[in-house]
Length: 354
Image (cartoon, rainbow, N blue to C red; front, side):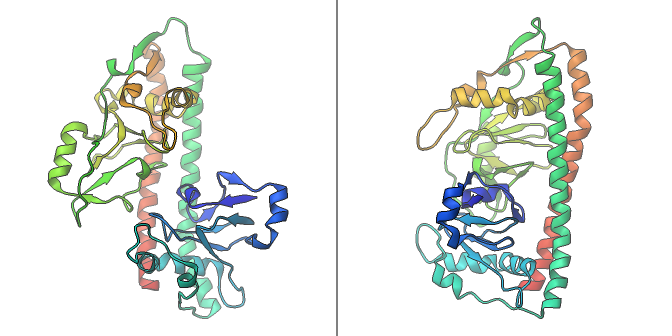
């Protein structure tokens, strides 16, 4: 059975489909009274991610950092209630920002929240409209996952299963530069350019919503050291290490902090190869062998600069790129479509619930 904590939310869209930790059969018996039925509404109630909302699509148990709602089917539609909670996110954050260092929404305040409940038929119609957006978004995410899995299979075929002993070894810095973001902490501003850190690297996207603004001066200063360009790869070096993001956009309005930057834009022949290498068994082994830290794991810039590749002949390499490029183009197109659908859904949400 799923044991859901706020840490799991980074992997969710609308539904909690999995969790890093599970409850054993013995635990299920012990905590049977707090098992949440399918389609409960789960709201994080502490920390920087406070106010995030998901539904569980199977029975689950959560830790104490999550407040849960079990809808009464005679009064509330599950999906409508989910979107209602998503729609009052600013209110949830307001309740949690009572001057404490760590935002927290206590159970008493949560239980006293009020939402407007139209007749059930109206709830169902509203939920159906909003769910149609999320259904399409989930479908596109699944398609991206499949495309990347196929690309990873092709990577293994070309560079692992059919590797040759006479391939040339190359240190990564012989192919392009490897840098990292600023180590400073620029002051937060009300507007400006976004500062991206490791925690903002998600699957096929960057979490701009939870990143803060910095001044134009700080933005330009950071970019003198580590400017991100189309075709570069970002790599999380601190905390949850090994998260990757391939920047395929030609409009880049952010700076980076404590993030590894593979400048594959300088040698785009290696763009897909390096991205897939980092997400392959090679990359997993590299992280395992080079990570340091106890309370917070990290890899160093020197570690990243020490990576060695076995490089095949140009014919094999070019064939690989021809095969995977359409997949990455489609992933990027899907990701753009996801962003557009999310924006349109959020506009409708605001009109309904604000």
